[in-house]
Image (cartoon, rainbow over all chains, first blue to last red; front, side):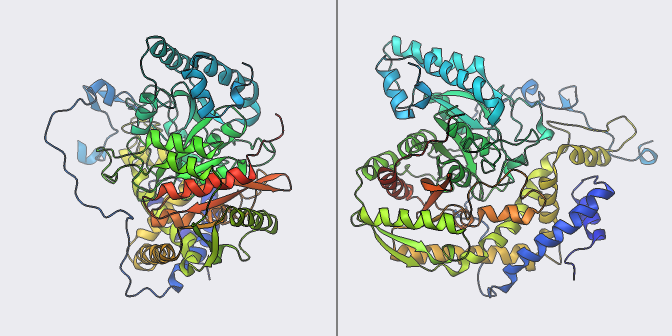
Length: 101
Length: 491
């Protein structure tokens, strides 16, 4: 039985903000199925009582001294932006037109 | 001096410091070599001719003024295109960042400049460092200087190929699941993954933040150690950077080069010398083990039973982190934007931009990670993989109570023909079978050339405890002193 269906892959693509084509969906569904069946092997390990590791270094919150240091100018920060206006990143509309009007 | 491109970094630095050549002459020799062979190899995505010559002139001026020079002053270095370089294009091998010129330098790049090295340019890589062959670069595959029809490994195939083709004596890579060590192995060069947190991730385009580790690539173990020392150490701008002194890797490499491993106990990972590696690789590995024995090392087998599950755990953990990290490529702050014609919403533009900007492997991993993190699947996939990560760490800890370092072949197979594994992503993943456990544990690992199988390089991997990077350099340098270095056929 397949681990993942074409419909599930289409849903993942939407969640991932990828406007994939129908052809890609066919390819990815088969490939992701193979990969998922392989990585599902982790389920064979008896690990119910084992604590998870998210990180190899023990993480503690790191705070720096509250001192001014040089940083990017607005021009530098916006230098790679596809579109900018009035020292801000310009984005396409966020609300649909009915709500915006 | 016509053979400057054949010299080691240590030799070049000595020649520059002694005034026998200039940094400009060294740099020009490498730029000429790149111009002569890179159309065949395609190791570089961008060659910064002007920047390199300016940096070289600065070194020569400092020397003329009698200022002290560092141990790598005047030595050219190629930098994987995963690190931000101020004003110099940084693409991560992806169309989504085509043309981006970062407004700042990564910490590693800052340290390279401070050390007086000369950055030649940016090297090719699998898109976002996801791949084992450099075939997933959006800008075309890099070719292996040993055989131009074969892959140079990945994701840092450009850096390792540049070394093997004598286009650079030093290079920087990044290793998330083997992207420094595996290209090193298949190109007959040295690649070292430092302890996680031993080198700064500031300015490294993130793929899997709990695993990504920048590190040195070179043609000799000593050169790798010199580069390691130049770039490593605590960085307050990286919250996972370890605030401890850098292990003394250069002294360890020099000690190893004396060829004496008396008193050193090495463990062969039982799980990695069974049927996992091809016979030619195993034969060369066994000869290298004999060489290590003759150098005085005591060699035993050590079982690490959970290493078998490292590959599946990695391909859940790394894609999960990638799906989150790559959300920042939204067509707003940098890079590509597609479909913004006034009629489309932000979400539509974002989806069209990411569809156009990402290649197939990146899309697969984003979707895989999104799946593994989604409610209903989280416990069975990402959660379980994190528990396996704990067990792999315990295997390492137990092993290092018995031995000083672990050894294995670096890769299961030699460089494969271009195109052989792209149709079946999981076959590509197997290239990292032996390198991945180290990343999940967070310790250091190095690949050192140990011989040829049918004319193609084989690497031996040394894995050491966290913050004991010096140990692996000692063992690698000792092996190098016994088996020598390997030169590909002339291009």
